[in-house]
Image (cartoon, rainbow, N blue to C red; front, top):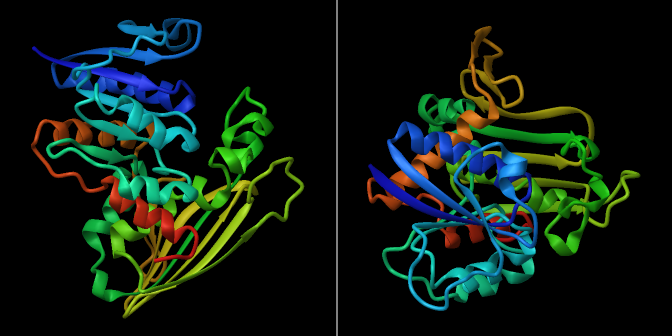
Length: 314
């Protein structure tokens, strides 16, 4: 049986989801996974109901590779510093999105990266059934226009947590609809590439008690198509969808209802999928990457390009 030694730095909601999911994925792949979680206090087993997770308190060896993969799942502002701190003990890295703060882009670009090491930045919506359907069934040269929206109510994001105390509410920690909702820009570029031109508008318009941008709106242009993106924290009914206008039809990919709808044909395709399904699929791909079976399709430098788009830059 293969063995995978993993370390998580950061124990928020996404880390807990990844820990549960990687245990399942490794079990299906006949891999024995051992997980260390760097934390200040407490026990992960109490919170996760999974075995084989060990809490580590400032127990970082000075030299030598210790982990096959280090997952950087702390707030965005700490990503690059964490990568530097753990670089000497991690063989490969899984970094939560966004890769860094906008102010840290040069740090990310200038860092010295090792040959043969996977530096993967999370982009889970790429692996969703809806986005994969669009990728594999809609010809890019038939597309004239793309409209993408992600609208939801921030106070309802994390059950049992005061939204005012989350990183999303704090610009200095990497919050704000423009970079917190970077998924939309990620799957747009995954499907259609980097645009030739982009213009943005962002700010705060709602009464949410946050110190970050609660909306971001973009218009982008390609040689043969245009794209519009709307992102916000204040929508009281969750909407996450992409509308693709082609020469023959208008297709809506609904990431909440997990369906594809052809408006002209009247055709509907439903997918039986939950969030954990595509996040497990992403972890499967990550393990394939570190085993050398496939190439990394979202390294740090590519993730930086997407982060620049969130600020209306190319």
